[in-house]
Length: 243
Image (cartoon, rainbow, N blue to C red):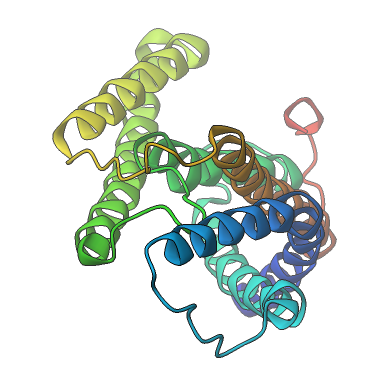
């Protein structure tokens, strides 16, 4: 059963990645081109020669982006299926489709949104090459700690459900996650390397596109996997009010 769910998770991840690719192609790539143009203008003003392209922009924006998205989606879909298999029947009486959507929402919150609030995506021309190691390490620390905070919040909510009821326990878990996420935001170093003259509109739209791409990926993966998992597991009797 786990193997069948794993295959369906990877399939759902690939399909969701194709949707995310289309979104990024329409909304993200124009902002990348504008940022590259800014970077090239700054290099020319400083008298630096243009960087040699190992891979052309046309390839990067089409086949390269699609390949990266598909690999990313397959990997995330496989992990998503394993988490689903572990959680199914253990964290509540949810149907496969509803559980998949809840896990996708939790994954987007912990893996994307909370880390993005501290370390948002940056287009070309933003960031110091000398601090890339620090920035990468801090970002992945934020992702790992955010996932741990979400798990702790869910476990806290489950432990309080018997005494407080499901609704109040869920609120307590949500408050615990917000507090833990806030502490993480405060504890990890702040990085702000946006040049003063970088176009604010390009930066804003790029970050919107990056966040939207992730939202399409996680939403599509949760919805698609829920439908596929329900075909394998069936819809348990008596769970209609949970999806």
